[in-house]
Image: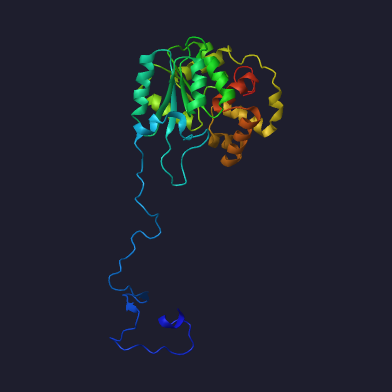
Length: 310
């Protein structure tokens, strides 16, 4: 291009007389020239876009549910579904309860949400394992009291067979052995069936995102048990503790106190990103899923709670 726009050419550029046309070109307001478009030619619309009709933003949800577990896994553990500019992530949920009317009720509540979809139902623990293998849910809504294999045994089995699937226990029972048993088995959350529907939906999203969720009543119960010394009063020997560095032990101890990453960083005088790195290392070395399991491990090791150094 150079000399046409009076660029870096050597001599002075002689302006053209007004009204003189240049074959094959036409004038454009603001300087510069565009290629001449022959008469009858049409401007190309949507240049740079893929040809064909633009795909719909969301396929029909009912039709997609009918495909069951045959489709790809919409979400995996630790995937927050953000970034990349792609379509919204749908969280796949399996509802497990021995009462059909309860399963249908929960499924109806969940299916009303645009980002949640029920991909299967189960009436006992054995059916949970079979169904998970087929439909690969992100979250299993698990009842504890079911015939045959109960929810605790199913949760324990899922932690081994499908570690990317999160378990949210939903039950009418708030007995200590159920709460502690479910959390030690690998559950990422524990809610009571009398919770508000919105709390249930929020809990599903929380555990799907890799975090833990406990009902307020369950949290108070857990704390009371620790304070009373009925849980974690006697440190249990566990060789996994030796896998952690001294700094990782410090992070674990403060995590068990209920501090978030920013608060741990302030206590230890390190950066928040460094704390996050340590937390991920702790989870990896100890084979833990989330902060709830890490907290229980810390109490079992005597790092926190009554008699511990926290």
